[in-house]
Length: 116
Image (cartoon, rainbow, N blue to C red; front, side):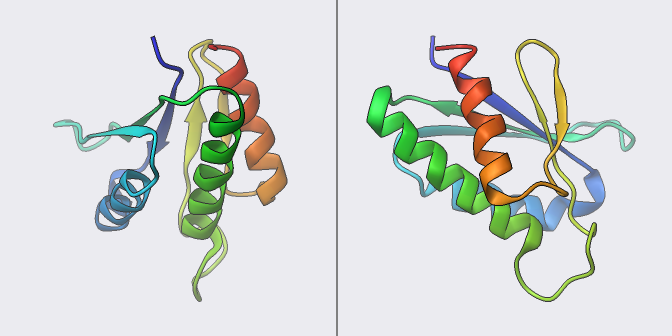
């Protein structure tokens, strides 16, 4: 079974999340699923499966990190306007928006290694 990361985002960001989904699907070695809930209060989920191992997995994680950091902090928007949480298989829940690129990479790497 491939290691999987789940991003939890608010429904208000729906149009931006489709853009994020598209960018993540451009990364080789990822399987991406977008799950939009019927309940307006429930978060949108983007599930990301990492198919690669070893060095290729590290490269894939760096690309995911870059894509997420750009999504959360790129262009001219107010801080905190886009928020995403990483939910691990263990149930840990980490807010990615205030983290630096290296901190996001560390969180993703730890989640990946916890499943690999």
